[in-house]
Amino acid sequence: MYIRIKKVKTSSGKIKEYLLLVEGQRIQGKVRQKTIANLGRLDLIKETNMADLLIDKLRDYAKYNKLMDMARTSCDWSREYGIILVLRRLWEEIGLDEIFKRYLKAYKYRISLSEGILALVICRLLDPGSEHRTAGWLNSLYEPKWENLQLQHFYRALDFIYHHKEDLEKDLFFKAANLFNQELDLVMFDTTSIKYWGEGKDIDILQYGYSKEKRGDLKQLIIGILMTKEGLPVACEVFPGNTSDLKSFLFIIEKLKEEYKISKLIWVADRGMVSTDNISKLNELKQEYILGVKMRQFNQEKKDKFLSLDGMFLVREDLYVKEIVVPNEGRYIICFNPKEAELEQKKREFFRQVLEKKIEKSTTKEWIIKNGYRKYIDITKGEIELNYKRLRAEGQFDGKWVLLTNSKLDSKQVALAYKDLWQIEASFRDLKDDLETSPIYHFTERRIIAHIFVSFLSLLVKIAFNNKLKLIDKEASYQEVFDAVREVKAVKLTEGRKEIVFRTEFPAKANLAFKAVGVAPPPRILSYQESKSVVSRQE
Image (cartoon, rainbow, N blue to C red; front, side, top):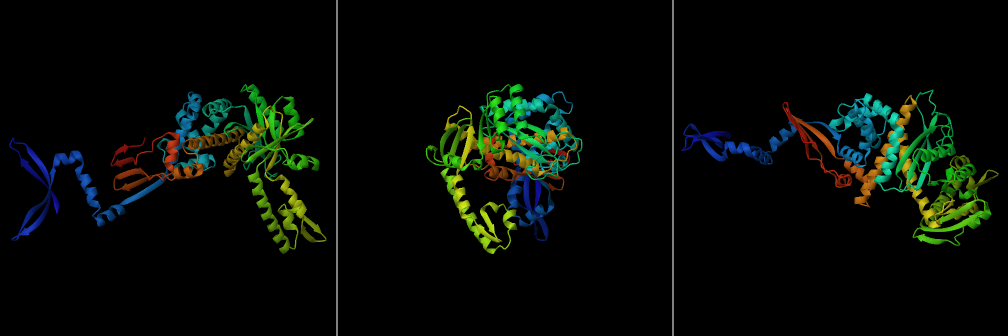
């Protein structure tokens, strides 16, 4: 069978062409054409793409041709696509794009700088690494706006961030507060140390100091981050590696008073910030605070009084509190979570069983000392025994924490404010994890500070994404949705001179990401090319 065009002259003298499907047959020794089907007028077939539609339908019945088509098609690449759309829209939605463009107006290469900054921030969320690694990482994603980005653009972006950090930070501080309706009356400040693996020598912020990771052989720097009670990062500072918590704490207080014109705040900090010097300085500056207290530092008389459940009242299902005022010290708020107490009791029972088995099988005490079990063990004349009395005494701390405050908040408000600190500390660990995923190797102070600020921005974007996600589905898991939208890829296929880029199917949870940031899912066909003509359908 084959195709034939039949020309027919109408009564008006016009020639019309018809497309026929014919079959050659031999009749009495001669080849004759037999019309199998009249497909219609040729001009209408071209206008309606009927031929293409018919071919697509017939392919379902043509097994050999389908296999041959697949054999002739090659997959050039598959790249990340969906997550880039979501994070770009989020960047614009929370106003970061607007803030940066305000300061980029005076720069000649403002477009490449703007895109370079965004690429660095997104890279911290998807594949943390150095700027060199980021430049190579661009090949693993589909974003036409980044096709011309090179390593130099990332270094220029870091330099821009360093020169404008103070202004950018101030704008971000108030922008974030307004965007999420934050009440900046209750803030949390925490610090951490970050190791330095590079070869920078004359860099002031790189100093030997107390390492929370026990790496005194490496220089380090201190990062301080300020967060609201909802866990939203609003400011980030970098300090020399030998800076004490108190000095960094006082620096932030002065900065808020002088630059941000904020003087009325209640500081919430964990037990690491509690010391006589810190408390005295806060009182001297007339600053209100809520500080976690180490319960094990109390003498036995205080423990018996503070940790007793007598006098506690219910705040909510999982929280009881009571207040004790100690002259010349302040107000202590004792908190108790019965569910947490039950969990800790079960853990201790499991811990007891593990220790008993270890003692029964062990002939050496080294494992005890090495693993921090020494305080629960008695060693007499080489014999190892478990101190059950000391182990049981740990039960007095189950599900409890003690706070010291000079604020005017009532006991319930103080307890709830400190519980918010746990969420904040989780966010702070995220920031540190992002930094530690790829050790810092920069040779200059400005690049180190800018690198850390990029990580701070990525944390802000991450929390903003999570907040928006919870607005449309409180039960949604941030990580599950994030992973789902990363499965939306752009794939390039080639067949002869034809090239097509299309997106893969959406996992069910990926739709939540697009809905959360308010962007429509992209079309299935992103672009196609035939010969030298190119058609793009990308939004």
